[in-house]
Image (cartoon, rainbow, N blue to C red):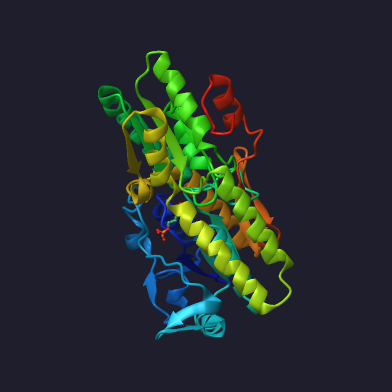
Length: 373
Ligand code: F6P
């Protein structure tokens, strides 16, 4: 029986998405399956906006950044439709049935896993591939896109070194990473940053300033501070923890809303903490400080060799599971190979940097300041 396969890409775009689409498409077509793409994430399932994925469309996309399908952060159960947020999961089921799909392959990170799980509960067969530059998906060694972003952030730190050195300045470089520090830690370590600040290790700005002054006393008039966008000073981390505990304890809707508003207010302050920290470092060290926010540059452009290989391997493995009829799984990276992880086991989990991770240990061994001691 011919199998019908749908593909969509959801969440923030990532280098390697096209390479993954190509691998799934070419392998599936080679096995006589039918393949169709949905545009702009889950939104494409609502309006049945599709793209034919044939040999021609799949050709020449291996090295191209972004996603030929388009993406969005739309949630099936809360989709913005004409100014209102509506549950569109039933409409999506209709599209799925209309195309006679055997499976919908969703390329995405933690948010996509949650959305896939919702559709699975409605009766869809789903397979996920773990994508995000943040590397924060649980139960997979790594996510695709991370290696490319890591390379871009490392190169940026390399380039910032010479200008920091010439001007005897502090340069604070902010990476993406959402609430995890994989990008800042990896790029900071590979780029030889003097200070690395990640969400998993809340920092004390005076300890950071002291490390920079120590370098100065030893004749190093410049310092590079790699900071993850989710990093925060210790007092904000304590406030956030207390507010989250309030949310868990909240007994009624009103109390929950109050706790959520409080969390949003703390997170807004945290979002500005990089600029604020840079100003504080100027005051505490007497040195000039500049901030570079790498932002979406980390998500753009051609995928690295590692990400091309990874997405090709994941895409081929995905079609193997389709052939076997093994659905409701995320194709995870395990060592040199891949493995199928049930989506209901991985949904809602996040992979943070363990404090005993070898990269953390290496940074400490090198004397890199992590902001806590
Ligand atoms: O999840 C990927 C990511 O790039 C995060 O690192 C970042 O916090 C977020 O997406 C930015 O999202 P957007 O592109 O929607 O602003």
